[in-house]
Image 1 (cartoon, helix red, strand yellow):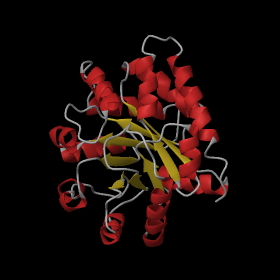
Image 2 (cartoon, rainbow, N blue to C red; image 1 turned 180 degrees about the horizontal axis):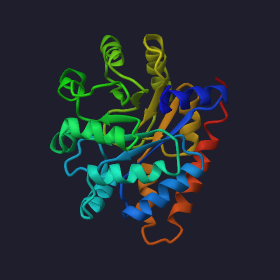
Image 3 (cartoon, rainbow, N blue to C red; image 1 turned 90 degrees about the vertical axis):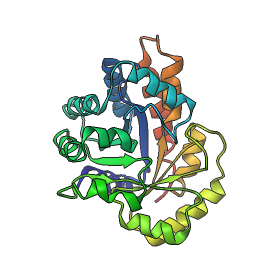
Length: 268
């Protein structure tokens, strides 16, 4: 059983939902980024999404766009992300998912990316702009199923297509809570709940919800029916407004602690 499957199994026994945290790798700098991530893990983060900075994002809102711009100036790329993962693996065993657009992976080399991801003990991949119909170019180079492929489900995805997407996914499904970009406001919990019920009826994979989740109240609401919640822009916003603060890791850890506590209030 891989780390992702094991984590969801353990959380279910504990009657908790997964807190999945996204940060852009190397923000605000590589060493501080590692300290931030370690503090977040110590504070209760269940799954880490480590973002590969990209110059032309289509799904990321202004906060994450600015974080990518900061790290690109420092030369952060996939090779650096793998180096960070190897360092993190010396201190933690939580699942690590690399979050990227396809262009950096294609430029790195598909086979090289797969082999280096496994060598760096990455558990999964989420490629934002690679639909299932076009992903064989990437997955055909994967010699095993050791690397989970997290698939995105949009709020506008028809049920039949949900089923097709789920068939080629592993690890968990990422349900996008709204149309638009990351960090945008407003959640319709009833509508999201209905979509999650549909997904649970067609797949055994856990379903995590992301986009627009930033507060403990958001987490508690979504965790009442989803298997996990994904928080990204809220963490990156904290980094951005506290760039010069020496206690930045502590600030992020306190945020993780508050959000994680809200995943423990639901029954499974």
